Length: 289
Image (cartoon, rainbow, N blue to C red; front, side, top):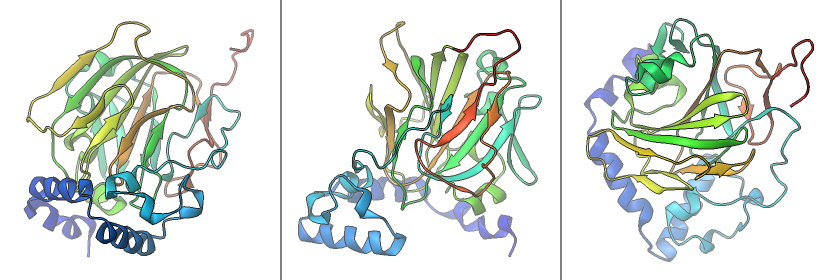
């Protein structure tokens, strides 16, 4: 069966209603029933609880608590690299941004402008730059960390569809990451602007950031924007910046420059938060930053 045919049922499913229901169930606190359900989920998806700060299933009062569980100190050491991988998961795609186009999967590209909710001025900053798209499965650690130090300038909530973001759907739904619901975070860094996009998906109950808390719901159907004063929100490399309730995808954008991705990276490769993602090679005659 082709990827396009396999994702056809997603066009027909009541994705928003299912996501709302999933969010309510995930926030429910039902004692031993919740614990039993978490155990079954962990067994089904192969969740490694030995890495959790608290490996006791009964310690999590709700699925949401379990989904956003913290890790034990030291299990994700931070590499000596200019840019760190911000999540556990798998690489979807990465590479250059060409003529405002980001590669999604074979036969599919989408525009930087569309990803940024039609903000052509913001998109121009990334022409000729670089992108990385990373997928978090249900089994993964669901907190998102900063790949580099940054100062938050703006956050934009963009309403949209709620297709799954798994690899099959990425191959079968055109413009997937620019049509799904998302939270776009614009940062300033010592290397210039940087964007980190949290992409929503079917039954992802909500997305949250450390400076705002839960961003969605509510799902009002309207673009919402928050602007931040210089220095109001500053995060260091490796700091937690947000969370997904269940797995999803992050997309990152960087401007033009001599950026080099980790040579070990390849599409579908498993990744861990804190590993080396990319470097900024020094130009001749420049000083180390």
